[in-house]
Length: 322
Image (cartoon, rainbow, N blue to C red):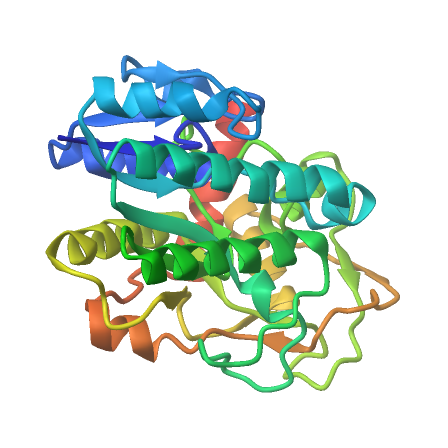
């Protein structure tokens, strides 16, 4: 039996693939390689396909049958918030349509186990912190909405009686296990700051007048290694039976401010960084921090690594790959 990882050549997916390989799991990969890096998956069986293609379902079903797949970890999809606002139909087609095609293939091939890559974006702009899984979900962009619809798809398939599944709601993912597996695109705070620093430009801070300890926004950053380990824990639980809950937050339960992250990057780079202060951006809540008590109590998972670990590994990896 084997595990199918969609998006397995991507940033987070490849970290999960690496851990699964280390413990001797049989693996197969589905990835369109638009943003994935084929060297990350080396010699693993690969079906290169866009899940949203109309012809994807029968190809996926046959691939699962050929490789005796019994469980799926689903990462593949689009994940840029601004792009989702500009191109909503594309996001619904790829994230929702692609997941529906995958689940149709799973049902046809009698594959009944899935770990789903969800996001804290389902909460939108929460008004209370820390954010619990039963906090109201009000996505404020198409990306977050597609993740929430994905969770609903899982719920409906469980109700139909053929699927065991769990969704993991990621907070802010950073860091790298190795340069090969590292994030290659500056889409989040830490790589964006690193890119500006290496270009000789000041880090940019959007607003320093928030009611926080230093005036900047506070976010929950989780190391990608910790996040990858959470997927293995969730998969193991599914193999022994449906977990007590359908969704789990994956974060540290601790917040770091934008200025604290910039200070950590400066220390990793060995230079003093003086940020450029820009006006606030619309829709940036002052703080978003995960309540991780559910995943700790029910799955026994807890983060181990700190912001300094994320920043140092991200800095070293960025230098090695750019």
